[in-house]
Image (cartoon, one colour):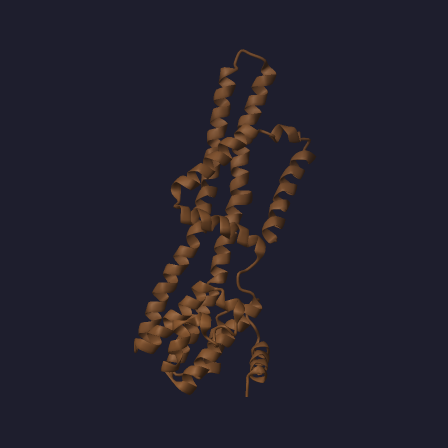
Length: 289
C-alpha cells in the first residue's frame, strides 16, 4: 500500500504546486510526448530482457500491492518446521529423514504446515540441504560455503527483475530528451507561422523533458527500489534455514539451532520466544498419544 500512497503523494504535490503557482493543467496534457517516452522505454525494456525477466518484473510489481511474501506467522511455522526436522534427526537418526525429504508433499512433517508446503522453492531448498546432510557426510564449513554460493545465486536471480526495472527508470530521462528534441524539430518547422502555435510546441517539448524526469524519479525508480527491498526481505527465510541447518550440523540441540535462526530475522518480522514456545506447546497438545 505504501507504493500507492507514495505515488499519490508525488502526483498531489507536483500537480498541486504547479496549480498553486498559476499553472494550467491542460498544458501538461501532451499525449504524443507521453507515447514517445512511455512507449520507447517499454520497448527498450522488452528488447533488453528475456521473457522470464519481463514476467517476473510484472509479477514483482503486482506483489508490492499484496504485501510481503512471508509474514510473522509464516516465520513461526518455518521455525517450527525446522524444530520438528531437527527433533526427528536427534531421536531417530539422519536416515529417518529420507522418506520426508524425498516426497515432502506426502510427509507428515512438511504437510503439518500447509502454508509453507506451497512455497516450492523454499521447500526444495530445505530438502536439498537435508539430502547433503544425510548422504553427503559434509562438515559445517563445507556446507556453509556451498549454501552461501547457492543463496548468492538465488539472490542475483531474484534481484534481476528489479534491476531491469531500474535500468528502464534510468532510460526515462533520455527518452524525455528525445521527446523534447522532436518537439523542437516540430517547432522549427512552424517558424514564420502563428506565434501562438510555436509557443504551444515549445511548451510540449518542455513537458516531454518534465515527464521523463518525473516518471524516472517519482514512479519507476521508487518502484524498482521497492522491488529490490522486497527481494531482500523475502530472502530472510532462506538465510534463516541456512543458519538453522548449520547450527544443527555443528551439534546444537533443536531449540538452540532454531533460536540461532530466529535471530537472523528482522525485528518487525521476528516472532518472539513466547510465540514460538506457545506454538510448540499447542503442537504437542494436538499430537496423538
